Amino acid sequence: MLRLYRFRYSTNVERVALALAHKGIEVESVWIDPADRSPVRELSGQDLVPVLVDGNAVIADSTRILHHLEERFPEPPLFPAAPAERAQVEVFIDWFNRAWKREPNLIADAISRGAGDGADVARWSARLQRRLDLFEGLLTDREHLFGAFGAADCAAWPFLRYAVAIEPDDDDPFHRVLHERMTLGDRHPGLSAWIERVRTRPRA
Image 1 (cartoon, rainbow, N blue to C red):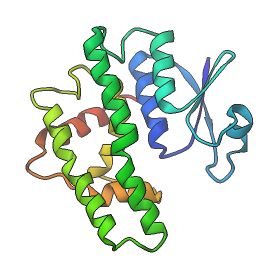
Image 2 (image 1 turned 90 degrees about the vertical axis):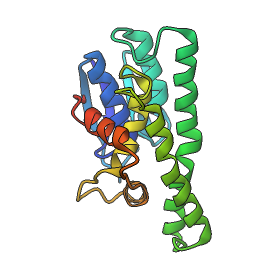
Image 3 (image 1 turned 135 degrees about the vertical axis):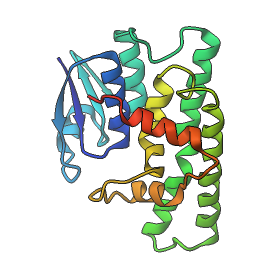
Image 4 (image 1 turned 180 degrees about the vertical axis):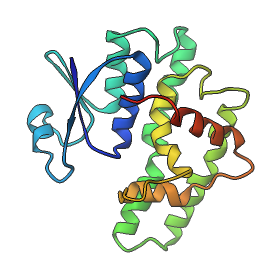
């Protein structure tokens, strides 16, 4: 059985949990205390979760794990079969990881330095809010970001869900930024419905 090293409220772990459940893969969960990541470090040479152990393979990084699962367990798929459509999903995930996540990370870092009221934070917050319109556009006449549920939904939902709610005991500063700086309104009915739709899906 596969083993997944994880801790509570990890957005990147949630990506993998959605993918595993979508594919119907059973996994043994190893819960890690975020204050003591030595088991993860000893296993993978780095401190971040998720880490997936599949036989002799040790895979860190949620995006790499999604690709590993797709290769090992191709059905049901996470990525479209058509090359052009798959490339669109790959570009989206790369954009989400490299560009979309930049602003909330910058905001969280500024707040931790006591600089949460500056002009830079206001600009980053406005950009984070405006980008909700991009997701709304992707969801026009679609139930999921690229049609069928797949890797793009796994990658984005654990972050965008904070626009709707945050658990009372989730005190992660990055999650607080997401919850406080993204506001869904009348312009985002598709995004609101998608967040709820994916929320009801099973997770490993």
